[in-house]
Length: 279
Ligand SMILES: NC(=O)c1ccc[n+]([C@@H]2O[C@H](COP(=O)([O-])OP(=O)(O)OC[C@H]3O[C@@H](n4cnc5c(N)ncnc54)[C@H](OP(=O)(O)O)[C@@H]3O)[C@@H](O)[C@H]2O)c1
Image 1 (tube, rainbow, N blue to C red):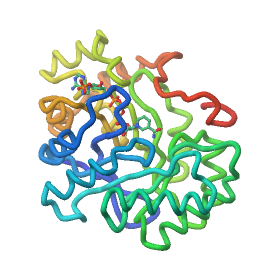
Image 2 (tube, helix red, strand yellow):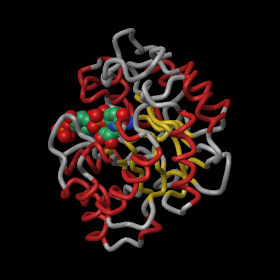
Image 3 (tube, helix red, strand yellow):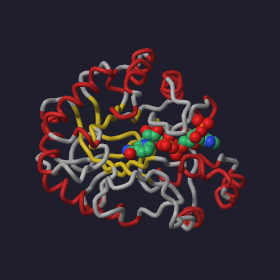
């Protein structure tokens, strides 16, 4: 069993570490120390966004770690207000300046914006890649219709879609579209912002395996070849969440966890940003 796992991009050379550290903590507690602890614990994939205001901290922790730049897979995103070509380019420049890096590994559209045409945004995203400012490109929070349009309109191949995914949220339809386009699914809020922790089924599996509920939930994602980007502000949890590569859930456990999906399982849902609604 390997200590880490990378998911290959089907479209081109490269891979994304299956466990990343999220820095957009809506639950509070995000700090430069948290990112530094994550890098120390072994995370080599860090997720940030212009909107989070955490790019400066991420850059600082990366530099303090002493790790070579090319050992860290760094994602940032352009916010929905900045999806016109000029705004997009400015936002990417601002991100690179805040991070103090020459490029990011994955640049994403953070949320779609029904008021700005994808025919303008996708070439802007591709241009950032062609300029060497991003090694890979992708989209976040796109539904199937928007994803199909984004792929068709983008002059460069997309490699990943980021969306909410955890045991309480059924993403089977979106997952099928992601696989059809040969993208990697990156799961955000993989711990449902803490809502999973009292769950009897997850607790039962965790207890039987001598694991934490968080490890079981994250392992369920990784075992589907999904990348996950949990956040924690606590040193012991940051390390605990990363230790998911030395055990395997059996088919019955995977099925029991998949059966936990619920109609009200979504935790991140800003009104009106996704034209046509979620799948
Ligand atoms: N693209 C998007 O639109 C989007 C939207 C939302 C999130 N994201 C990304 O996804 C990342 C993760 O999402 P998230 O931070 O909202 O939620 P999350 O990772 O699902 O959950 C974080 C919460 O779980 C708690 N927690 C973490 N590990 C734990 C453990 N082992 N035991 C008990 N509690 C634990 C944390 O509390 P403590 O701090 O007290 O440990 C925190 O309150 C974000 O940071 C961001 O990078 C992206």
